[in-house]
Length: 297
Image (cartoon, rainbow, N blue to C red; front, side, top):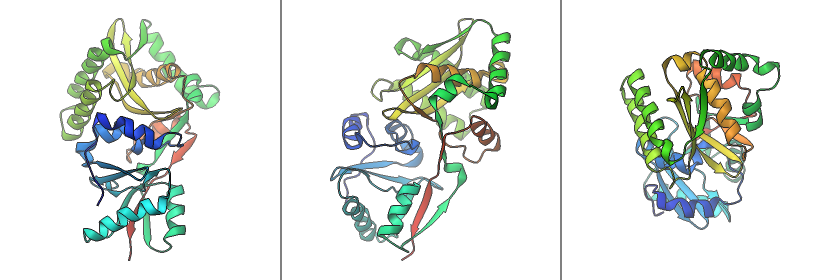
């Protein structure tokens, strides 16, 4: 059986070496997500034969193994999880299967898996240049939001989230939690934000804080999935600042800051109608579908 473990910051080096040079854009494989959400989804990882293996014990789409990622003989690596499922007396269940991986599975194991897709699990991926510049009529409403915010709050700015800005980002997170109530989902996300800020350097995170008249009113935290591909993990704007277009402002200003990437992954809409409408309104370059797969034999 594979040598499974909980993700630790010390695994970053092996993770980067294993995935170096691979064209990866999915948010689920971001090391920061593996680390920050490990308790929520009971995530485990393993390294073997030049591949990264992942296993989830969460709910819904967050259950099962993933197709191994790395270099070398993929079929040989995949057989390791087939063998492990057999040893455990289980039918193999897979999570976060991309279209490319689905095609590979159907070719190598015809008729062996049945696939399901929930649109709420798809990643929305944008050209950084689009989000930073908002050119053309298709973004006129976004520019209007930014104009409304700038008119209401002339004295505003964004600062990169360095060590001395962590307290400000945490203050935004605390106020956001108070605004939205401390139910389980809010508390879980707040804890993940706190964990991200505590491990900011170790996870090589990026981020920014939005200020109005010197007061922190918004924050965002991101990481790089692979060179040129950023993943937005958290984005929060408080109260009236959100109502006046603060999310459009921090989205644009942060995209301007991270000018060393080409794509920005803003993750899933989890089937929330308002969130879906917002993500679609930014005109994604890619909607990355993800499937669940279950063995049928």
